[in-house]
Amino acid sequence: MPSVHTLELPSGVLEYREAAPTGHATTLPPVVFVHGVVVDGRMWESVAARLGAAGFHCYMPTLPLGAHRIPWGADADRSPRGAATLVREFVAELGLSEAILVGCDTGGAICQFALDADPGFVRRVVFTNCDAFEQFPPQPFRIIFGLLTQRPLLRPLIAGPLQIRALRHSALGVGLLITDPDPAYTRSVFDPLRTDPAIRDDFVTFLRAIDRRELAELTPRLSRVTCPVSVVWGLSDKAFRPALGRRLAAVFEQAEFIEVANSRTFVAMDQPEALAEAIIAISRKVGITTE
Image (cartoon, rainbow, N blue to C red):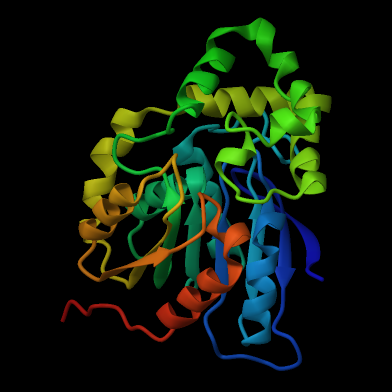
């Protein structure tokens, strides 16, 4: 089982899960996972277990995106760029500059913001189905998030109805993102929003800061990234279509597009073996030199 830690960073306090390699020391690069909104670091555990058996050290921070338990706070930069700063601070504080960075969903956009700020802060990048270009966020979540930011009276109700499993697992909830959701997990990630006004405030403030025009301008700039990139895309995803993944892969000079059958947005939960294999494969690749 992963160990759980708390790390105080200049831009906020994060909980994170750490899974060390099983049974032996390793010279393989560490892996840092970046999730999206209203999930936490636990979503990566099936992938991390497979990577641990192969000798990889995995780090699974829980970013303050709605399923967190430690408030980000009103003084923080509660925006995608602010979340990207947390990721870069996490990497720097733990000495993980040789890491493979893995992002999904909103976390993929956050990885893009982090790479835009510093294209060389990690050595390899894996994107699974995620926001890119002008798609930030996808439908129907763009409408749902818009209602939450524009209608304050709805905010205390954010997670209440999602206690009902049928609604939580519907196409308006996690059912759009995961093929076979685990009821205990999907219920637990909404508990902080349901019970803590400070978490709700963090979440709504982050949603309000999302600007798809900003990401539309940013994603093409990632052509400056010269490290190996893999874009690992679930083909059954109705929120993030494969064409978006291919378009994202085309931005990078050194990128591979990997199709994953029978997976929706959360490849890490639908097809953890496929994602683990892609991470192992990219660990063997070397970046482009500029000399």
